[in-house]
Structures are given as C-alpha cells and as structure tokens.
Image (tube, rainbow, N blue to C red; front, side, top):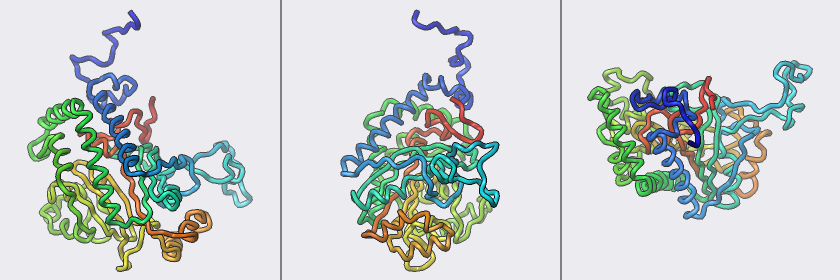
Length: 385
C-alpha cells in the first residue's frame, strides 16, 4: 500500500457524479477526473502547437515583462505591484502616495498585454510573438472572464491589416488541426460529454453541430470577412433586433456585446467572422487611423459559442498621428517616450493581434466555463489553490 485513501471520504465518487461547479471547489483533485485529464492534455498540445506554428514561420519568441509601468490598453483596470505598507504609505506634500519610495521607484502594475514591448522587438527582428500570463482587474464574474489568463501576441513588421487577418486565420486553423491529429481520443471523449450535456437543454438552445463537426467545419471553411458598419446593418435588420431580443442596444458606434457577436456567427453566417474597421472612439490609441477619419484598421475574430477570440490591428506607425491620438485620449506621451521612439527612429508599417489562450481552449474543448480550462483559475473573490 503506497498511500491509503478512505473511500468514504474521497470526494470523487462515481455514484454521485460530481458537477463541474463542485469540482471547481476541489480544483486540487479535479485533474484526476477523465474530463479534466482530457482538457489539460489538450491544453498541453495547444501550447506546444503555438510554439511549433511560429517556429516554423521563423518568428522570434520574446518574453515580455509581467510587471510594467505602462497600461497598454488604456483600460485602467490593473493590479498594482507594490512593497509600500498599506496602512501607512509614504505621502507627498499634496497627500498623494509617493511611489518614488516604492520598490521600482514608480507606480507599477501586472501587465494587461505584452504588445507594446512586442512592437519594440518587431522593429528589429521583423516577426516576434509573446506567449505569457496577462492580468485584468475587472470585477467580471462571467463564464468568459478571468483575472489571470494567457495570451499569444504576434507582431509583424511590413504587415498590413490583410496580412494580419490571413495569419490569424491560418493560425487558428493550424491549432485546431494539430489537436485533431494528436488528441483524437480526448476530443471524442469531450464530444460525447458535450452531446450528453446538450440533451439536457431545450431544443432551441442546442448546438446544430457536435464538437468534432464544429472543429472540422472551422478547419475546412474560410472565415467570413465583414466591416463593422456591415455588422451593425446586419444586426439592425435581424429578426432578433426587430423582436427586441437583444439586451443591449444596437447602433453605429457601440462596442458590440457578446450577444451581438454570437448572433453574427451562430445565427447569421453560421461560421467564424472577422470584423474590421471599428469606430476609433471604442478602440485603443495605437491602432492605425483610416482615411475616413472615423474608423481604425482593427480586426476582431468572432467564433461560435464564444464571441471574440482574437483582437488585433494594424498599428499607427505615423508619429504625429500617434501623438495626436494619445493627446486626445489623455495618454501621457512623456511616460511612453520609449514607445514613440519606435516611430521616431526608423518607423515601419506593422500589425499584430492577441489570441486569448483560454478562449481558444473553450472553443476546442467545448467546455462552457473558462474556469474549467485553466488549472488554477483566478477570478473575483477566488484565488484558491
């Protein structure tokens, strides 16, 4: 006997099959179940396939910092990194906290993205990618959000929006194909599990395709490409809009919600969709401004069941345009001097995107909660194990 286990107290019992919710409470033991065995073997394969894809294309793998003094998205919802005492931090004469006395001599946070540093690499190596943890301090308790998640962010010099879309589409296809070839047994197990789960749902809510059919469909069909303006028109003409089925309003200028994205891919086109040309007002400062003066060269890839899985853009390489945009958005140019240097000293057209690793995992495994595709989920009020 190597290690005894009291069968009465052991929490994983076949007779009362534990739910996924219960398994999240004992996440230290859930690896031992068939479902999570399959999920995490696929996670391993998917991570390996990411490095394989970029390595075959000659990209340089760049490790970007986890601790940063810049806010890439301008979102402002970041975790602070500090060694200052909480109860009595040093203060300046005006009463504000004196970060000059902090560990790094300034205010620092956990990163929301490796993109800005990635751009520095792309201007030297031409093509780089990052793959690491990113952090968002949004108080978002949904099945699609985590506070700590992994992101893959390629950045390519001499690439425009079209090249960016082509790379992202072939990347997603490559990853799915790799898992289908190398994890067939795990996928079949998860497909059976999903089919059982679907039977519990009302007919109207069931997926039209099984997991493996859905993956084959994505691998074998071109993604639909539309502009943001076309997307809004489709939504305004939709029966769902006319019957007031959408919870959030639809008009030009909105940041599309998950329900809108899923309508486009699941009901209208019935396949993945790439949306381009978003309003500048709802996108980040670094995106290249289009000639119409209203939109930017951005792209999002939307997939069935999830909504947005990739967000990217051609970057604004023109120094004066970038500085003007930062000024409009109240982003301090003096703090971002190093980023602006890439435009000052030999600027080049470039583009890139970010793929949320856990959202890709949801898509490939058919799991419905993002906390079930990362080993130790971090979410609001939850940092166990």
